[in-house]
Length: 72
Image (cartoon, rainbow, N blue to C red; front, side, top):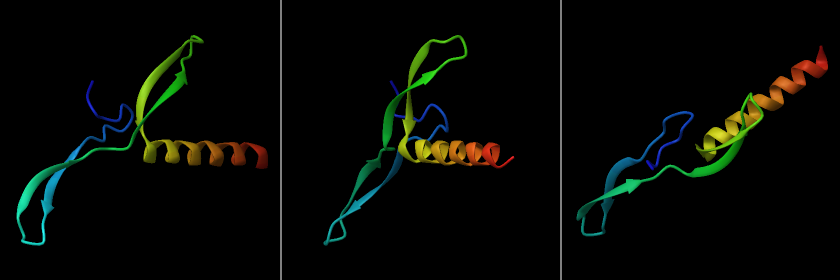
């Protein structure tokens, strides 16, 4: 299973660890993935890997959508 967000496609980044002596070694910065259950249209649930930043954005968009419907 790849370490990749299944909604946005965010994956690992590659960079360097730099020591005080300026030695450089490769490192990977992995996305902060969370496993969440989503409800499908047919009533079943599916577990997907989603980045934490994506979850935050999804919650924000859902809150905005509910606020718009309550105003109207």
